[in-house]
Image 1 (cartoon, rainbow, N blue to C red):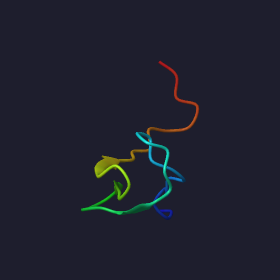
Image 2 (tube, helix red, strand yellow):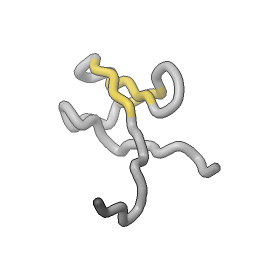
Image 3 (cartoon, rainbow, N blue to C red):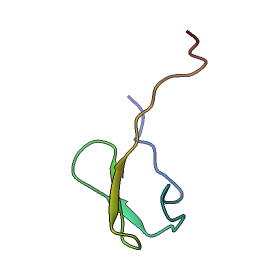
Length: 47
C-alpha cells in the first residue's frame, strides 16, 4: 500500500491550512473549519 493522498488545498475555500483529521483520508481545514475525506476510486476506470 502506498502513502495516503495529501490534498494541496481545501476543496471548499481553497486555503492550504490543512491537518489530518480522524481516521483514514480525513482532512480538516483550519481556515473554514470544514472536514472532508479523500477517497481514491481508481485509474482509468470506465463503466
